[in-house]
Each structure stands twice: as structure tokens, then as C-alpha cells.
Length: 415
Image 1: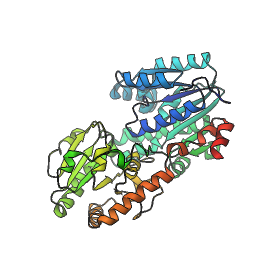
Image 2: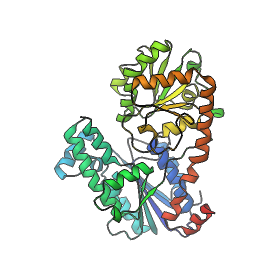
Image 3: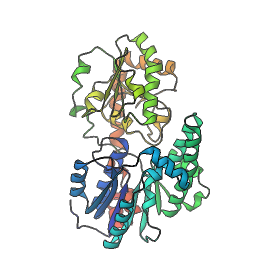
Image 4: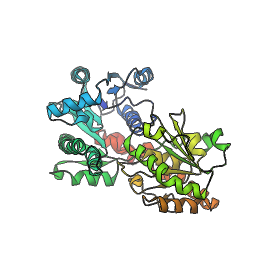
């Protein structure tokens, strides 16, 4: 990586709530590609958090960044909650508060010619110094305050989630007014964000969607998992970080509602839950008829490749779902709910199958899909074409240069 090239840019300070390596989950994937794009524009200094030792992350940052700070995230969530309540702050900010990282940010700005700060995720906006005179770009991705409001409305930890939603909404508006541009992951999230602002005219909003590495997620690059190939199926696959509440909720919705209907029509059907940190509630279903909870795997592609259909029945979703784009890039038919489709302008019945969050309706759509192998193959092929045409990372992140003031690079992408 050429660390000396700055173009018309000075140094860039990139702040992320997790080490952006390896790119193996939704937020890390976006942060990873965002960092790669920034490194092409100028020297990048990276401040982020890690839970425990992260030698691989350190090695990767040493290669890509001019300097970096990886702060340990050791504060237990209950302690962060108590501190947040006493301080009148969101738990999300308190959990990611670090004196070490704050000191490093100020020292980096003092020592280097930093012309821009790029913040990935709202928790990290607290580190932008008030006196910083360069450009500030905030990538909120999605509207976290709305997510916590949804949890409260669903009856989950009502007081705590309603409090978090209210305080995060205040912080999201503060960040929007502080930033030269606030990035959201889809037009729907941008509209939601604007609708929650008291003065939307004072916030510059930019939509930059998620991309996909279509060379990595290529059906020709991975063989189906042999254990799945050895069983008759059909096989249904759901991927994701399985201690993330919306993913856990979706997987349980399939296990406790949809699978009973699918097994009546396909007695040897198996639902595969693939992703790290499955919760106790999910593990309790492992080995029950038609359910296999795999946990963390070295590569999700063999599971996707073996799927007769990839399911994404999210009931609460914010932003663009990488799991959906990955399955589409692998040319697998995806059956999903409307929430899971947010920010992806694909066509129902052509590029994927959309269903209401009703087990009977989704079961009927899946049965119709499996009864017509030619239609299934056609939808899978169309899905990959859609991803190639609309969701490459370089195209998605092309506006970044202009937001940071690199007019030459922005004009090169526009040409």
C-alpha cells in the first residue's frame, strides 16, 4: 500500500467500533471496504476497538494504515449500563468510551496533517474533537435509535430500550449537524433518519449502499458442503452473527413456526443456522427434527452453495443485509421478508421471492419454488446478475472521494 500518496487529501483519521478485519460479518465487511477505499485516497490512521487479543487485526492494520490504535473493549455491558444511567448518556456510547482511544485521537491530530475524520458507526462520533477544523464524515449505516425503539415497541426491556432510543436520537442529530456529510445505507434509512430529526435542513445526508465481493461469493469458487450433499434435503440456510437479536429472532421464527409446515411437505428438510455465537435459545433446538445449528464456520460459501433456498425472514432489520447479497451473488434463490429486502432494489419473482412474515405464506412460496427447478435456477442466475450490475464495492464507494474533498478522484470515478 502506498502510504505516501495523498493526492489533494491530507491524512484521514478512521474511527470504527470494531477492528475491520477479518471481513466476516456485516459491520466488519462494510468497515473493511470503507478502509480500503480511504487508503486509496491518502494516508489513513485507524482507531478502533477489539475484544481480547487480535493479532490478525494488528497485522492487517500494520500493512494498510500509517498508524493505528486498537483499544481493548473490556467494559461489561451491565457496568456500561449503570454508568450510562448515572451519566444520562446512551449505553451504546458508554460501552465504547475509552480514555486510551480519546488520547490517541488527540495525539494523532496534533502530530499529523489530518484533513478529514471518517466515523464508522454512531458510537464513535464521541471521539471527534469539537475544535477539529477539517471535514467530518459520519457513516451511521442505519438508524440505531429506531432499532431500539422497535425493541421497546415489541415489549423487550421496554424502559431501557425506550431510553436508549430517545438518547441515541439526540446523539444522531448532534452528529448529523457536526458532520459535513452523514451517510446512510439506503434511501429508506435516509428517509427514516430525516423523519426523526428536529431540523433536517441542517443535516447533509448521503446514501452509500453495501457492496459485495462477487469474485469471492462466486458459485464457481466454492463446492457445496459434503455433509449437506450427502443428505437428501431440501436444505434451507440462514447465515449471520447469531447472538445479534434480529438474527436470533428470525432463526427462531423459522424453527418454531415455518419448519413445522415445511416438514409436513418435505419430511427430510433441514434448516441450517450458520454463524458464530448461537444463543442458548437457538442451541436448545439443535438436533430437533429438521434443525442443525452449526455455529461459527471457517467459510459460509459451502453452506450457501448447498442450499435449495437461502432464507432471510427478518422481522426487525436496519440497512442492507449482506447475507442477502452474498446468497444472491452465489446464485441461490433467496426467500425473504420485506424488512430483509430494505435497500436492495431487486424484483420479486425475478431476482428473489418476497413473502409476508407469515409461516403459511412463506411455506407456500418455498413449495412453489422447489416444485419448479427451472424457475429456481432462473431466479438464482438473475440474482447474481443483479448483484454484479448494482452492488460492486468500488461503484458503491465512488462518492466517498467527493465527500472528502478529493475532486480529482471524484471526477475520475465519474468519467
